[in-house]
Image 1 (cartoon, rainbow, N blue to C red):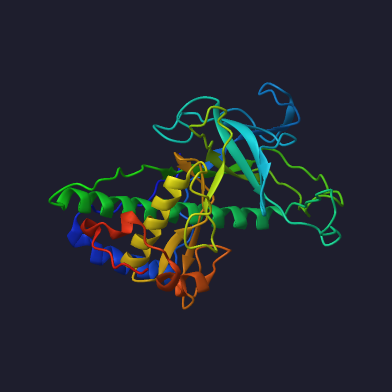
Image 2 (cartoon, helix red, strand yellow):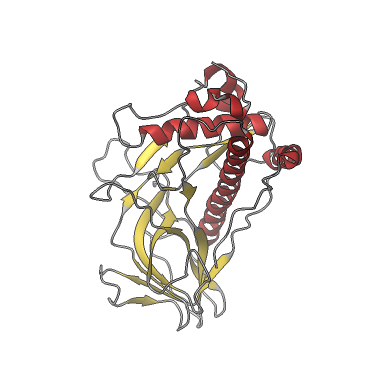
Amino acid sequence: MVSSAAGYSAHHAQYSLERERWAKLAYAPPPAETITLEISAVYEGNSRKKSGRGINFGVHLSILYVPLRSMIGIGAFKTAHPGWLTLSPLSSSGLGSRAQQVVVVKRPFHRPPSHAAGSSTLKISRYALADEHEKLLNESNVLYWAKSLLNFTYEYIDHCVNAAPSPPSFQIPRVRFVDAGIALAFSHHSSNTQATSKQAPMADVKAGMFSAVYLLEERVTSDTPDDQTFTKFIHNKDYGPSLDEDEYGYDLAVFLAFTQHIQYAKTEGLAFISDYQGSTELLTDPQILTHREGNDLFGDGNIASVVDDFEAKHLCNHYCKWPGFGLKVYA
């Protein structure tokens, strides 16, 4: 089972209602609505092979294999590892819809106080299980609502294009956020294993309690020959593409800047997606920037000043200026 973005009506008459809904969300987002993947067997192994032996956290049924010593990459706050997911029964679509599905397994980390900023060796520490669970729920919640807001954006675009007397001279890029879910591994036996000084503090694991938590995401692929290009299209402090015109993904970055314009306008200046990154087909790790008057934010990393200054600093492009979209040209 995976979370799915909330749907939005394609009827123009509903947009005022949706703006009101997003206004409420920007001030008080709901708790995470990502559906949990209840994994009863998780294998953390050192081998790159799916059949390698590891630590069995449970028994039979749904299985997640995570070779944690293998790493796809490391960001500012999370590590990403290769994984293989098999749900029983299989999901009807999306994440978990096929056996041994390749996934990306993410875990948050923090740098210990003793880590020197200029050190050439990166040292990281994991959070206590309860804290790790909370942080990953927040991550999945941001992704959930970013998918919803991007879907709303496309519905507005499609409505305007269909209603226009003549089509635009440009094509509309199609991109989406990855399918994702929280995986909880449940223990079927008691354990009194104590954490070492290098591990996050951990209480005794009792039977029936979850003993590990992960954020699972669909693997981001690209259309480049080596399938290795992971791109930051728009940084959360920028108002336009983070790429030069001759770089891979620049055209999509221009379009994504336009989607921010729609989101800002249709939420009446309350919220828009930033930190657009991934490939030209799949996006991941978004932020939702919200107005500074909001009490609860969608997640860590909000920069309210970027929202405040959007109209003054956003550079409208050819998408923004097409009359069929009915957008105010800011600059």
